[in-house]
Length: 480
Image (cartoon, rainbow, N blue to C red):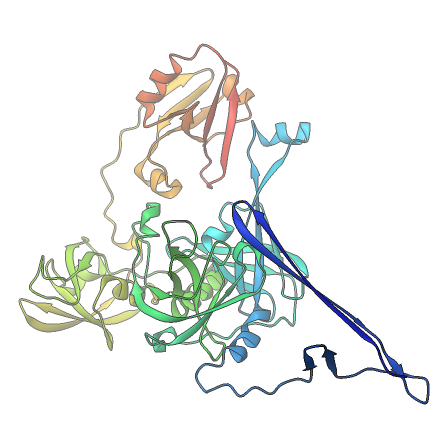
């Protein structure tokens, strides 16, 4: 019996939100024929009015050096989707539990499996302030994740899921990456899972003042810049070479619109691996420091046009102990040439306190070199004069100004801290000792004097907002 086949195709065009949306529907009804044994026989090709379509697998020959298929097959199974859920803080946690009005805020990003037992590298800003972390694997399994450690200085984080025999990506050598080299970016932009885009490396050791813009004077930026398309949700995903090796963690884009405008930036893999090793072993990054303030040598403050100009030297720091001085220009670390501050920061960030490095520098036009031992920040920061803290007592609680160190740790510009809590309106609100108030109502709080003046004007109930020393954000209603 001759088989019968019917074919139809439809096109639907509609307008949605001012944009043109084109939906193409294709349907196929296929008849079948039976052989002499009565078994159904199916063709390996499809016949239509326009000719035959052969559905046999093709063995494509891909020119060497542009095999995106090979790299995609290697990396896609190792890239995961991360969901960050954080509680929208109410009057207090006990209030939320009592009335069942716990509200959650949700954001998403990407991560990269770097071991078969479930360790995942991602961005700090992907997991920041998370109360719950969920990972969706390439096979659609959803698994809760725990936070192992974070490093805001590089915008990196390490999380862990309880699973085994997982696909993972091997680290590549980001130092060997060449400008103009093909790379792939893999992640979950706009919650579109397992999306692969291609581009080339357009620059290395790029500083875009992203991390420093978060009030982090120790922020390290030495990004790999590419034109592979990256969008919201790609953060924490993989940048790989065409061998499928991880050469970076996608972190940011340059944009005026909030979406991809041509350039994206990734933390280089050698720095990623060092940070992940530290977080796994110590729970925090072990970072050795030179103890200098630096800027690019560009002919303005020195005759040198390349290298890193030392603008100040920290007393008691590694650089001072080794004899480095203001106006010296660092041009090399160990056997590596140093041309910019980004390169210097990255090379030093790969080291730990106690590691010895060789520093090549220029002084008055003459080449010199010195060996020094990197130190912890605590090893050379000179203690500031003891700050005088005023106190203010009202409604059973004592408030004090906060220290510069507290401002730096909590990343706030001002506020007051509850140093003592007794019976009264503050304790009744559910606040605990140590809470730092940064806002009263809609007013930001700079210091204790401003806080006192503001409270003197309050005649009825109001809200206060702030942070606990561990970084937890809260707000409370004060019954006045």
